[in-house]
Each structure stands twice: as C-alpha cells, then as structure tokens.
Image (tube, rainbow over all chains, first blue to last red; front, side):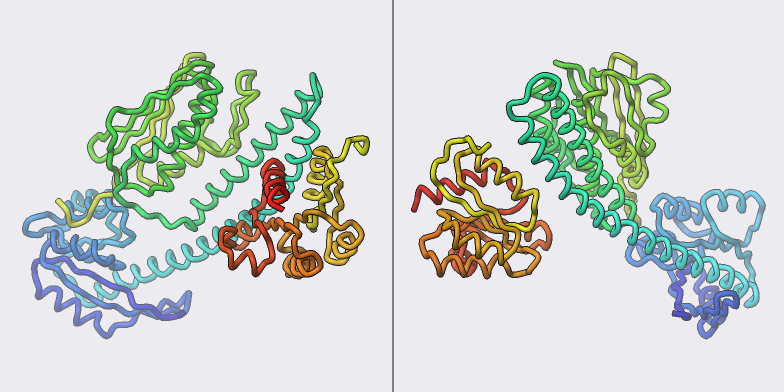
Length: 377
Length: 135
C-alpha cells in the first residue's frame, strides 16, 4: 500500500478555524518522497475538550489539533488525560500564546508539535507533512516488529510442542526404572524426574512469555473478581502446601473487582503464590492481599521463606535468573516466572517490587493501573 | 523379565511411537500379560493373525494416516467380540474432539473405548481390565 488516509480531529472552540484548516487539507495530498507514499486527510471537529475526549474514546484518530485555550477543560488537561490513557496518537497544540513556558509544559506532556495562531495554509501543510511522515514510518516499523514477533512465537510454539513428546517419553522410562530401586540410584532417578519437571515448566513459561510478547494473546480487559482467580491459584498449589505444611492466608473479602485481563492476572497470581510456597520453609506461612490505592491495584504475596540477599533481589526479575543455593537446590524453576510477572505488570502500567530479608522471607508487591476511561470524569 | 508368571491374557499394542510400545509392553508384561507390539499396519495384521489377542490397544493416527481405523475395522471383522481400546493424541494435536461416550463415534471407529494421549499406564490398564471383565 502506498496510499493512506489519516484521520485528524480538531478540538477547538472556534468553528471558523476548523473550516479554514479543512479547506486547506480537504484536497491536499502529502507526498513522502523517501518512501514513495501518498497521504490524504479526513477531518472532524469538536468544540470542547470533553467532547473531544469522548470522540477519541470511541474512535481514535491518527492525530489531533488541540487548542490550548478551551472553554471548560483546558488543552493541557486534555493532553494530560490522553497521555494517561496510552492512546496511540500524535498531538499538535494550537495556541495564540506561544510562550516558551507553554511549549515546555506541553512537550513534557507529550505534544508532538505546535501551531501558533494565526497560521498560514503553508504552515498547516508543513506540520501535517511532518506528522504524516512520523505516523507512516512508525506504523511500518510496528508492522515489521509485529511480524518478527509472530514468527518468533510460531517458531517457539512448534519447538515447545516438539520438546514435550521426548520429555514425556523420558519420564515414562524413568518411572519404570524407579520401581524397586533404592538408595543412591533411586535418589538419582528422582532427581532426574525433578529436572524433567523443571524443563517442562520452562517450556510452558517460555510459551507464556512469547505469547505475551507477540501479542498473540488478545488482551481482554474486563471487570473481574480477583478473588476468584486467587482462590483458584491457591487450589492448584494445595498439594504442595500440604506436603510442606505451608498455610496460605487470603484477604477476608470474597469479592474484589478489578479491571484486568483474566489470563494475565492468573499468570501473575500463579507465579507469585507458587513461588511463595516453593521457596518457603516447612510449616511456613503465605499471606496474599489485594487492595486498591487510588487508581492502582496493589497485589501482594508475602512469605516466611528463605528470603533473598540484597544482591539476589536486584537481579531477580531478569530472564533466566535463578537463585542457586542449598535451599533452592530441590526447587525446579524456569527462571522466567518473575520476568513474566514484571512484563505483565508493566504492560498494565504498573510494576513489581520485592522486599526481602534474607532468612526471614520475601514480599512481592505488584501494582497494576486500572485503565483510565476516556470521557469519564 | 520373562520369568514372570502370565495371567494368560494376550494383548496386542499397535502404535508408531516406539517409546509408547516399549514402556507399555514392559508394564503389561509385569502385570502378567502376553504382549505383542506392532509399529505399522502390516506388522499389526501379521501379529494379529499369529497372536490372536484377547484385547487390542490401537493408536488412531499413525504414519499411514488412517491406519488405526483400517486396522480396527479389520480386527472387528476377523473377531467381532474383540475389545479394542483406541488411544489418540488427535485432540492435543488438532483440537478435534472424539467423544468416547458417543455410541455413533465408537461404532464408526470400531472401538470400545477412546482415550486421549498422553495416557498413564494405570489408566490404560484399568480400561483394558474393564473391557476384559465385560467380555
């Protein structure tokens, strides 16, 4: 495709200005020489910041001409709101008071460019050419990147599938060999089975991670009861809890609604809660909590386990990082779980941190931003 | 291993997955079965006529794509009362669901029981025993 129409939304309380811009851009075609690409424009207009945001919430335009001085909500407020919503659009501030101060403020809030009133048709054409260039190039880069990630994901899915079959076969043989074996040989077979299990976990985690990165997993942010997922996770680790005598304490509320993707929240829960059990001492405790602080969800899992040194805490969230000492010797992990948790937390505009005292236990705290609803006050 | 006492039951295992055969041959032998294995249609037909099994465990999809179905129809024709357990990774591999509780599908496949792979030996043995007891 060498031709595309970009959608421009103008938010300005002076309709006459919009008609001026419309006249200039209606039949205008920008030609991008370097990539041999034609861009034309489709325009719409809203008279206030509130209406503008509602319109963007419904259908995101490619770029916005945003008046600095609006009745009601100011241009900077609108800009700020758009920045928080992570919408993928470029914003040009339109202002009659082109002061350096305004420019700095707006740029900090993510404005792409400025138009100072009054502007000439040439100035409009100049700005939209710059914008068209930026949008088309970043769209192309994104497509190429997306394609690369898809290929990586497909390759890894096939690989994971191919790896599972030999693992199952080896496990079957070891199960047979284990029977009637005692002492050191039995210990070695048991350890082989443990390593196998670890490898299987690695494969699943690797798939999770690439699925998230490739965007293969469609994100569906919905209102859901976090407690349902927390309880379900607790049930899956119940056998291990019983084996180690670990007790999990859940928050008292039975319902805690959050806006999130169920699959993502489940991966976070699973990793943190199963870690808290795996790396716990016998008869230890795990405390799970979820609260709301402002527009953030804070999900925390605290254990009374082996804890981490400062150095270990620092590198914990990298890929393929495993903490190796005599206490983690019998725990199989892929070294991917926590890096996946961090990726997911960041995908949700939050992060994860750890507080830990070596020998006493660790607390993992995940913050997730609930997505800001545009057009809502 | 051959010193084990047999329970006299003859079982034929047909699968192109050698690991499946080796492991299940060992375990059925340990349970006292007389076991024959086959990795393809031709060997399976031959083993069937020589061994005259009391029960057959059959993989649905082998290298010759429809070998499992061809064989089950063949075995049923030769020996109408023969219990046939069909094992298949088809659901895992293609997402296609074969419903073992559906009489129509069982009769079309000529199988008494259809089990998904991977399958634990204990479960396979239990299903085989149930079918043998019902004979």
